[in-house]
Every structure is written in C-alpha cells, then in structure tokens.
Amino acid sequence: MSSDTDEVLAIERGFWTQANEPAYFAQHMAEGGLAVIEPLGFVERHQAVAMPADRPWVDVELRDVVVRQVSADCIILAYHGRGRRSGDAQPYLGSIASAYVRQDGHWRLAISAHQPWSPKN
Image 1 (tube, rainbow, N blue to C red):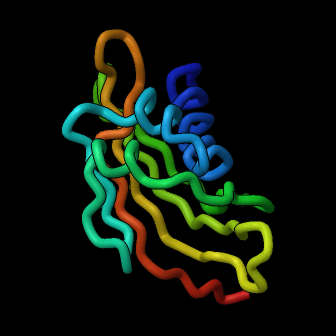
Image 2: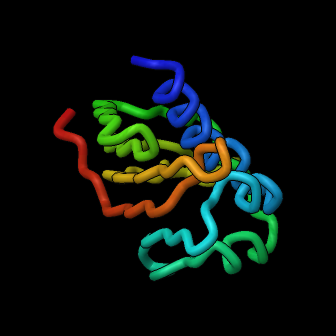
C-alpha cells in the first residue's frame, strides 16, 4: 500500500472511532459527500455534521479490505466492518464501499454505502 491508501484507511477507521465528533465529519467528508446507510437512508455531508453526537464505535474491525487507487485523486475501498457501540449487546456488521477524492490536497470521503453483512464464520 502507499502512503495515500494508508491515509485513506486511517480516515475511514476514524469515521467509526470518532462517530461522536461532528468536526471529524466536517473535516473528512467532501462537499457534496453522501453516505447511504439504512435505516437512516441518504445522509448528506451537512446532515452528518449536524447530527447529534452519538457513542463512538468500539471493538472496530475492518476485514477483507480491498483498496484501489483508481487515479491520482481517487481511492476506493471495500471491506467488511464490525463494530459495537458501548452498551449495545450486538455488534453492527456491514459490507461497506467508500470512495475518496483528493480536494485541496486532502483526502475526503465522497460516498460511502453500507449494507448488512452476515459472516460465514
């Protein structure tokens, strides 16, 4: 992996571990960025930044990670994510695909889509 892909993976992990920090979303989500997360539906950048602080994810795992730098200014990644919010009995399990673009020299999340994941083991 390159320093760019390492940086993007670190940012992606931060969306989990700093989910209670609206400033993190403001800093790392592209203008016009979008997340598709059911049952929330479509979450635009301004909505993500304005969402009330929630509990961060703990016990975060990114498995089966696939990273592709498709151009100098675009990185896509796909993975199986697992995390639990403090106090929740069951973890969240999702298949996640995200695309990052470089804007003004910084990597920003352009789109992320989550769907349920049922691991085989």
